[in-house]
View (cartoon, one colour):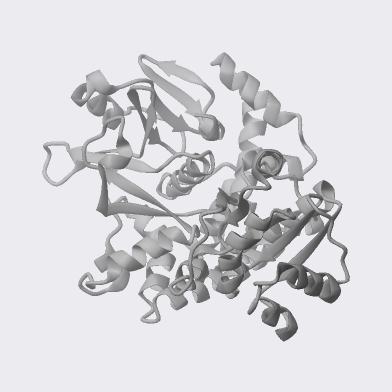
Length: 443
């Protein structure tokens, strides 16, 4: 199925404003729908297009990129091979999975300068980073990122274009909606958490209405990512760290504990491995803000961080990887709204995904309580204007929000709005704004 994606509008903006000056590189994890989106865009917005999938390109196609000095002959060869007529300023050439042909990416500089056609590239960053050592990276590229489908795109996929607008409208009103509407929206969100935003998973849900089939598809995607992580680090450490993400979050540790995940002392080169895991966009890294202030990026720790999955649907499956579907209690509990408090880390992963997809960097903060080794923790920090917005995530209702209160005392002059994300309806508790978690992407 072809799903409506928000990135389409930004691609239109590129075409209208910069198509003749820059190629467009669509980045993202594997299986987030890059190729499908780009081809749909080409079909709708151009008179003709050529799509070259370098993951399976023939030797004849490969050889075309060995010599592009004579561009007239170069384009003639492509049109002949693909049996497509290209029209000046009305056609686009797609370099799909461009990481498999670095020389094609290097050619972008000359092709854009020629000006006859537009160019769109897609690629997985894991492989892109590995395959550019001996080529000149073109400066004539604009980059856009495609994430897994967010909650709004999931609504669109199910044929519901009304509820997302209603949620946005009510969020702007800052008021409670009442139990009936709130419970319906939370039910929809829980379904999104189970299915996730990977197009294949969404398609499986819409085609079968069977969460067991959805789980099977998600397991295939996780196995694909696991293979990719073994390419990053053949020692298997990246794979171990990836699979250990749910356990790390459930332990409530104040940082990702590498030693626990690997069962060994921290290896010397592990920081590079972690960086490449983040660049893969399969995981979201949240850095500890050493000095929580407006310039969060300037104070993020490179050594202290948390790790989340970029898609909560995959997270749900990975959390119970060693069990088959019928034993996976998290599906039952989420659907029936009986998620135990000790499974609340699922909502924390969801909040990380929603914030990141909305364009926010991920930062958190911990500080000692003065009671032994215990810490207060602010799950997420946002920079808004000249203030910071601390966010605490809870999986159900709340009795206290001690971490928020103490943090706001400690940094009172820096605080804007203070937010508790939870599963209840909107409420204002003193200076703390208590928001249903489905509002996270609108913050």
